[in-house]
Length: 346
Ligand code: NAD
Ligand code: UDP
Image (cartoon, rainbow, N blue to C red; front, side, top):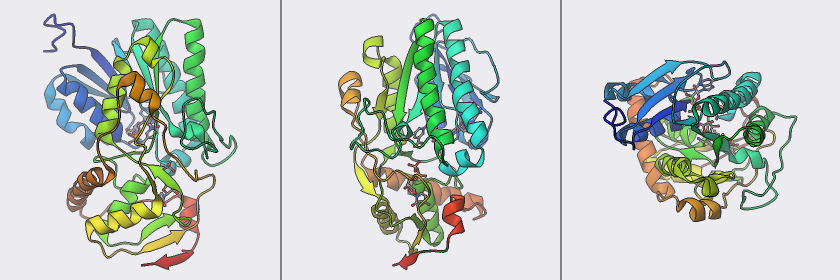
């Protein structure tokens, strides 16, 4: 029984869309462990039932298959709107669905929040900054996004969701939060997710070539999932003054993609070699969050260094691959896969 039903006010009824995904499953787990009643929604496009099956025993968790682009109803106190493919491979495979999910998913979450007087948090992204000309990226930077290209379905989808959050609040008194999430990694990413951390780890563990796009000089800042979940929860709990404007959540430690590849090879003891493939269109050249606002407003900063987070993630994939029987393969972006390797390095 939920603590709320026992008359204890702390317990909330919380909806998490995209619950069977990588971040969603960790968020649900944390909320359930805190004694909340959690409803998960997912269409299982990039998520998996295995990510949440262990939570079903809790009794305070229910999963429902649903596409958030279609209207739905839940009576809840809080909504975390995470549903959306996040890996370039998957959002570029279904670009129209990605835009539909981003915009209509946000609209439906807002409508429920307005009707229930619930708080609603939108999972936005560092992609709203595009290929940034300002480094590191603060929240008041408007970005450098190509609105008519491979990544536009995701970047502009997420930007339109932010604009919708702003517009909705002009017309109705809804308590909204926007988290601009920077590259996050950890256990429960899919083997075939296609993003760089899972690709490199799976390739290294299988002794396959490590697929570096371009020369690997582009940078990213990698946040371990536990840190990110802590940030999301603090943002949801923040008051209207602290949480009114979008907030960057990410780890400011910045690494080149080549450094990441070398670190993964080193940590797995792999014999894999780097293979350099063409850089995908509009791939941001540098990315690092300015987290001053999160530090000040939420008293939040990430704690897990990249090496520690990678060690946990490597353990996870090691186990997942032994169960998988080596069937699943990391996937590449089509344009990166189409080109012959530019060069090989040891
Ligand atoms: P993920 O792909 O693992 O999870 C997304 C989940 O949403 C999946 O379970 C998927 O099946 C579900 N989904 C997709 N479309 C849906 C739809 N129309 N209806 C219902 N469910 C749907 O990705 P993730 O990394 O866990 O990302 C979660 C959220 O965080 C996304 O909104 C993403 O844009 C955002 N985000 C993630 C990162 C990151 O680095 N992980 C960075 C920036 C933003
Ligand atoms: N990348 C790579 N090899 C891969 C997958 C990705 O070199 O197998 C690069 C990609 O070109 C980008 C960075 O790693 O520069 C991060 O890619 P990811 O898809 O993880 O996320 P993004 O930040 O680009 O959305």
